[in-house]
Image 1 (tube, rainbow, N blue to C red):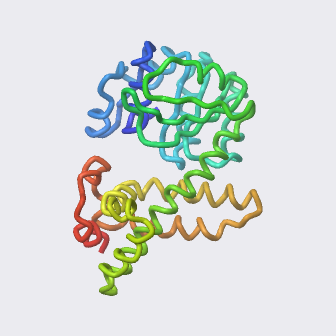
Image 2 (image 1 turned 135 degrees about the vertical axis):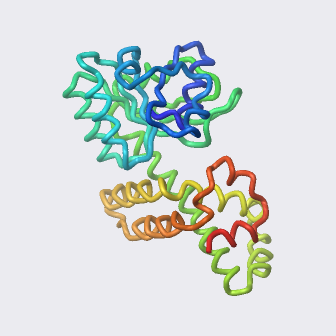
Length: 276
């Protein structure tokens, strides 16, 4: 749940390790149905839950609670383990784990660091909870599991900290270069930044385009980071602002591209033009 770009790639990584990986694309877009290649597709969610020893949730953070509710409703007495690998706050991870436990499902808190797994790749998956070692032990090709604790919330805490840097930095580049382009100083700004960050300047177009293509789902992630930082008493203001900025970006033509389309863009002028 759900077999988009990340979820389907995780599924294929476990399938390459020898597992039977089932999913459903019922009610999903044609793009998702294409992304789910290589998985054993079943007609509906109850069929998926009934066939599973482990249900893995990979969805936008704002949907994590609804996905758990849908799985619990579909379980009909079956009690697979449940791994929530979504970008959610530790507090929400603990809440979802408690709800799963009340229904008899052991919940593993997880978070993903890096892009979708590829054959021979090394996508980090952090895991916490009593059954985290079991999930970590599932054979795979492309996943590097790491158990970081025996309680739900710990793996999500890792994600909230790392994502604040990765996705916050991408937004800073987007905002800075869009501003420079509109004020007529882009070349000078790129030359200056190139002195200190030559590799980042080289990939700026693709980085900005990819962030914009995912900006709609990043709004919820920034809100979860803000809640996490607020709970740690470091304040939520920075990522409240980032949530608002990603929300603005989500209304631009650049955001209407799929991640696959965005990955192909290399002309920074074109990318910045689509942010207008």
